[in-house]
Amino acid sequence: MECSEALDLLYESFDAQIGPAQQALLNGHRRTCFACAGTLAKAQRFQDLIRRVPQLTVPRGLETRILDHVFAQVGRSASHKQKVIRPMFSWRANWRPALATGGVLAAAVAVFFTVHGFLLERAMRPADQTITASVQGSLQAVAPDNRTREVAEAETPLSTGEVLRPTGAQGAVVAITSHLAVALGSGSEIQVSKLHLNVDTGAADAVYLKLRRGTIRVNEILHRDVSPIHVATNQASFVPTGTTFALSAHQDSTDLAVSQGSVQVLMPGRSFSVIAGHRAHITKTNVIRDVLLKPLSKLHLK
Amino acid sequence: MLPLWFAVTIPGAVRSYHLEPVSSSADVALMTKVANGDGEAFAELVKRYTRMLYNVAYRYNASSAEDLVQETFLRAYQHARTFSGRSKVSSWLYRICVNVCLTHQSRAGTPMSDIDDVNEAELLIREDERPEVMAQRGETFRALEDGLRALPSQQRMVFILRELQGLSYGEIADVLGMNEQAARTNLCRAKRRLQVWLDPLLV
Image (cartoon, rainbow over all chains, first blue to last red):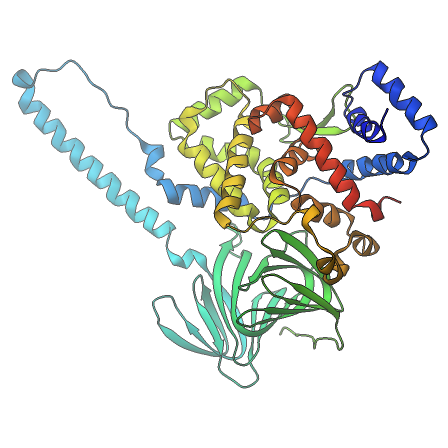
């Protein structure tokens, strides 16, 4: 038996896919072939590793987001479809009552869709995708319809699609939740890509930010299984897990520096982690890593 | 009421499998309601199968896992009438999810990197990502996931469905539209590549 055949047989034996005769062959090979003893032993360890891979938990609020997405795409009217009934009917004999019944039905349907549409519009209102954030320093918030407002040392609503630009030389800190804050460096600009809210508490389940330019520092105080914040640049997405990190977006690259915890970096076709004390220079084709020379200054929430 | 997920040991098999405790008649009844536009039935479907699909999508493409699961359920809702009841709902959803994953990858236009294509220069740059470094950091599973994402699509999907989701070869063949022997061959190849990738961890 060739060593490569033995490895395949061993893989299949883990699956209980080989018969007694093949098992005997495999056992014989393992006893006599020292050349592949190490490989087969590692195959066993590899299988043990696979068995320990845990099932992932679902990110908070995902089921709600799925339902929102699907119903937004297909329209909730699908759940209110009326069955088409085709009774035996003579227009000539029944046109008057039919016309009256039809009028009443048409009015009822019109009322139903008006109320339904109103309720749906209320349910889909952007206000549902708004949270209250606390701002330290001063910034300019630009809504998707280009309405601009200035915020300084105050609480402010934060909505999907808004762009935030600090106006002071010191930048600004935006406390999104009690455990999550983003410090915007002077000259930086972020956009709130998506906000997913917990229906029960109204708190942010997940926050998606796009760093358009400049440098931000993210501070997530609590370690949780699923991070509520995702930050994207042109090169990659960054998913922190209870951490403090800084991100600088340039035209063709992104610089990441992690001071606490670790950040998972997701790029097309690859993903990796950058742990505390390390930094990474990321382009579309390359990742260059280095040790962080000095720690990031910490953020403090009020 | 049975719990949503429970682990059972299949005689002769070597690992615990997560199986959905829904009988096929209940599946068919649920899908009939979904096909008739019953929003509550669809919510129940989402509740039962989100975790299963999320695990597949995440292992296939972590950065787009949520979008892939949402798209899978959207297609399931739109095409609920095509569910014939000849296969399990889970198999039907797996099939949609696999198609969504593969379509997403081809649309993205960025070919996934291949373990065998990693050249020496890149290995130097990616030294921190090598498995031995990751192992020192206790990131064994991430090293496995990184290796998994660098596998060719078909091998990756067979590995996910068989080793991480616990599907039988028959189900995998049904989901991926290949014969059982092809599924076995793909799994062996995937394991060989991953074992080489993870070699420094396996000491």
